[in-house]
Length: 332
Image (cartoon, rainbow, N blue to C red; front, side, top):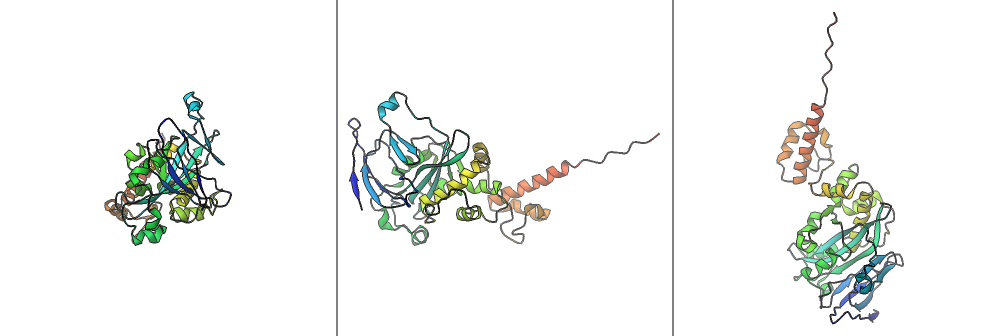
């Protein structure tokens, strides 16, 4: 372990945090996290890669670049010499210790930004932060992400650290996650400053309905997104690698549909391309008998109810647009 120390004075206020960073080979840039300037506690953050540890103070501004970050002096910001900000969406992934409201034990992120030509791509800004869930990590969740209790000793609590990731200094147009309903249980509107959410699972159902499965990892290998570095996306079920994989799905979605469209789809229940269970499992909804389709309207699953409603509306609309054949005029 190599340790270095650096400090920066900004008036009388001082804040420090500890970053544990890592690189997957030389293809992954170092990503740093920062905390609010009024945070005086030491923080521990884990990033994926070769281990390096440093005690730093959050600078006045960090500008993301492809090879790392550049410290911008506060006087430049005061003079209005800020770097123009592109549209940005931050992809979030959480690992938890259980099902409690504060049981987060790791948060990972990866930013997706829009280039001047309108195309979206991944930014160098990515990382992960270990969180103290304030309780023992359950064996059930430990078996998924392999984060141990000893790994989170000395890490910040969720409510202390969440805003620094969910409200980055470079403003975001939205936050995103795969099956975002899970992340939103912990990332409350207050912690997110009311940012809207994109659910990449719901959007995948709309854009790629031909695919057989829609989990984050299945989409990864069914689609094989261009530019996804295999090693950075591992191990699965850790926060930063999962966010990195999800970001590639989001990039491709944003290059197929508008940000506003993705937000609109995300605000609705999932539109399932096929019946997920029961005697009609695997069938396209257009092939389901009308009586059975009406029965799905009472299902406990909101996605099934919504999809059945949409299919019924489609059939009604189709029947109403069928034109009557013109009446043959009487020939005199």
